[in-house]
Length: 227
Image 1 (cartoon, helix red, strand yellow):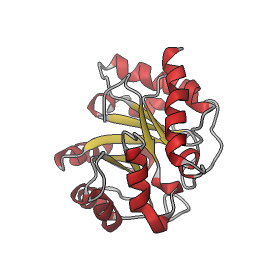
Image 2 (tube, helix red, strand yellow):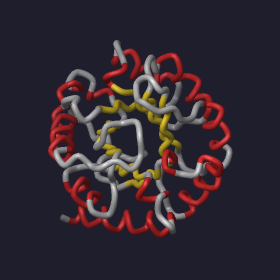
Image 3 (cartoon, rainbow, N blue to C red):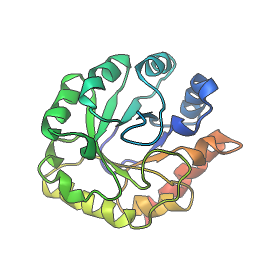
């Protein structure tokens, strides 16, 4: 995971064929993906259930690029260490799911993983005012978490701009990731707003040619960088 200003594509396995996740990882990294996004859902914090540490450990054996773990779960502190040991290069927890956010962020760092915090669409950027300088990255949800294939929330662009202003104010160059409804139309807009990492699930794995979709998404996003 690189710093602010460097565009990265992170295909999300949430939209891949769960019967062939290893193949999905290989395809994505061969097509130039910078990261692999690994969504963890518990059926409580979000209304869906997905994957856990054993699946991550298996995929870590075939991944040549970092795996970014997104914990959409209650009490994430209980599982941070397990995911770090399973191969997570970075771990994001939700501000809405953590009671002592500063403690959790530094606990993630102690495991050797990069620490991020995710914000739901209704959570204001100001929620991270006192922790922004400690973060390795921020994940802005551009849909309500829980399911793939949702529609991008338009006001997310102003939220990304506000997040970049907050990070800059505390002297941080931490990258901003965005997750939800990212496709060829939304990518250039959200990158122009200040996003650095595009998490894309359906746009990649819902395509008839995922490798081509990754290349096209990067080209579309580059237009946002140039604007």
